[in-house]
Image 1 (cartoon, rainbow, N blue to C red):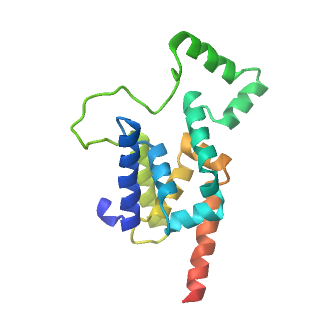
Image 2: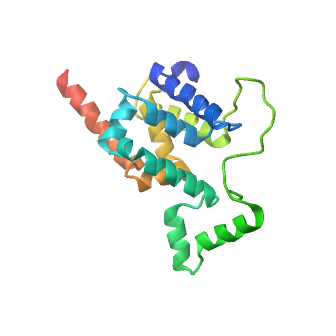
Image 3: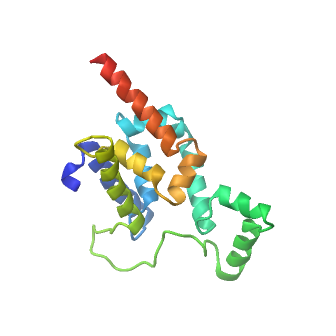
Length: 190
């Protein structure tokens, strides 16, 4: 499948590995794929993120990812829904952290195991994103997988990254709309 990736999509994957290495994380996660996408410039995904204003909210997005992971993967919307039922997620997190230490509920970070230098495996979720990017490309009639397909795959997948992107104005529908408008603009220019 990697041979179908464009240079830009390969850059996203390589950048995600770099993010994992710098963070000292044993695996490459969806978070790392998103952070790598946010690093990109001059690509279809970076243009879509800029059009949606997500690129200007990177710090808030990173903070939301971190907070959601700290809550054990419970999104802000889920926490609000639970609050409506009388369940205070912040209180639960505080009690667990008091008993077990800060970040005790953090998801996406497994135990650190020895790995050969330069080898970071992808989590099941990150692999799922790459698989969904292929399906996204096929569904759109594209012959190659670009970084825009990775972005679409991040927005459609279940999980923390999709929830946080949606909270920051980049749901699948938003990204698809921007990409479609960009595609129409390119078609008219030809």
